[in-house]
Image 1 (cartoon, rainbow, N blue to C red):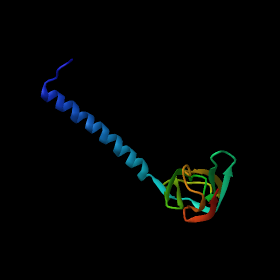
Image 2: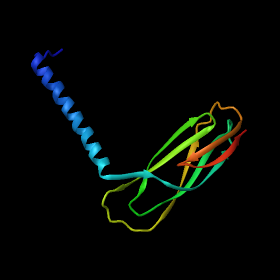
Image 3: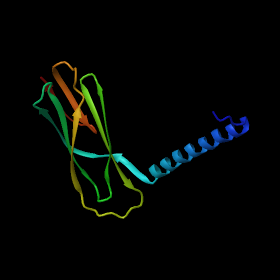
Length: 134
């Protein structure tokens, strides 16, 4: 095992910390150059896959406002019988983009494993629908 003098070891730890901090700053700078918003959702429906146990998929249809905007992230949470899904978009700040609205469709498998049968609701960016879990 190589033994370093305490002063050199402390310098290496400090250098590693600075390098990690610089990576974090670059990620923050990259996000600062983006406009991050919730996606515009027009319709939400539920699809039941013929599997055992049954799998439930939320189909979210919406639109992107221009050619530079893209889907960034999809997050899912559940509180009791309510599934909340958030779809965010990102767009470079100051970008010159085509002004063509683009439709999108996202399929989100809901985490229903182990849930009791009954009435549930799914909301994607506050647009929702009810469904019955068999």
